[in-house]
Image (cartoon, rainbow, N blue to C red; front, top):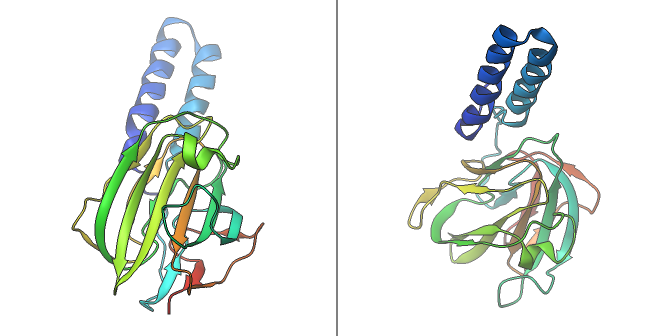
Length: 207
């Protein structure tokens, strides 16, 4: 299983502590630390996904449960948008993927609070980053929002990059939310409460 590189400090640190504890104290303390390393490996897993090829599809940028699927909330960027929000539990894959093919026109980072990611106000109050993508003249915005357990958002794409739907572009650490803002004429294909898979589930179709 492939692991995201952001996880190696956590996994390696836990394993080193487990080894040191086994030598100095015994396996009674080492086993919980080894279990922690296993959890980190599980959390930072990065499974291979096969993305649909149709260029007009918008794919889920993350695994999780759909919180919002419809008109955008007050936390949306200026203008008219539709919105799909996905909540990631600590058990979900946290590697994030590009939702739509095109050219990245803007990448922003905003420091903030660490409210529970499922709360509506988290979208405007929490630490977050935004990736703006131009798809044949249409704009799609993917917003990474960290939550109460997550303390860092990792975004590895830069402005000017040509991207394809399903490409990996970052990760959020330990429990978070993804918002996708779509043109008003996009057709949403998911419902609130639905479970989605990053890079595979079609969440909308662009005109």
